[in-house]
Length: 310
Image (cartoon, rainbow, N blue to C red; front, side, top):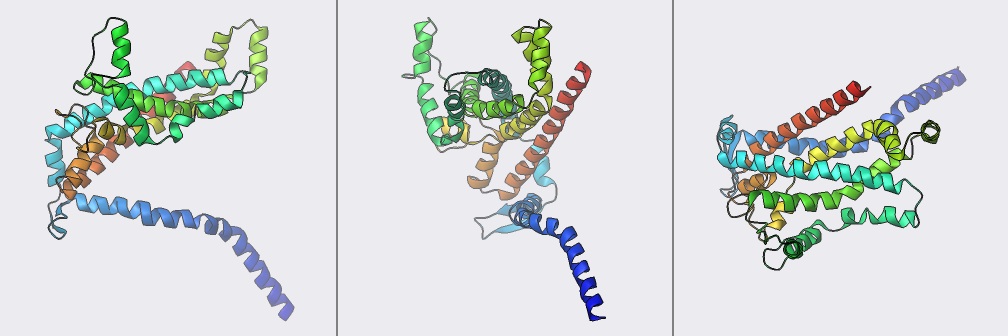
């Protein structure tokens, strides 16, 4: 009888171990996410419905949707949103195209191929502060190397920080330079998973290198392209460090006329300069909703294009 009970208990423990162990292994992630991710997210939502002033001993009062109504009527917010979208487009599209081209080159047999692959990742692991400071000097109005090169071909100097489009181009160049190698390695990893037999068959049919790239490589990379597009959208709409450092000051206004102030900078200004934490939390949640909408639209468009080509 004892032996039977022991066997039944062991069988029960074995079933519990088989079914429960996977959940136990992944539990630390969800606990950490709930503590450092989900709780701050929900608490920020609560703060956004309050008139919250941290300087006044953290005093706050419930105002409902007042912060969101004020935000929708705030011209500075719409200016920041427009700047964010402009920088996102100018940086993301060239960045992904350049990454695809670099990955295609690195996928061939080259000398020092490993060193080249490691080299394209160096901009991504370099300190963003150091990178932006260097590029701010390169785009300097009086002694910048970019203006010197423009002058060599007969183009007058550009005050990159003063203009809206000039500042957006400069910041977009910084973002693209930093992330193009990272995306190139993602594309390269996907390219190496493409069966080589497809290229051999296409070559036997007389397809050129260009035709093989557009007819085989790009269609096989569609899931990866969708992934990088969504990730680049999420990161691009949250851009903050580059425009903040590009201004060569600690003011989050994004230039003298807010010409390159992004939504993240506007949120920082309201939260840590004006100390309107309720309003800043409303900006944060609005930005989160904008990112979700754009990510979904990006995903649906890229998948629709892929389905139409099929």
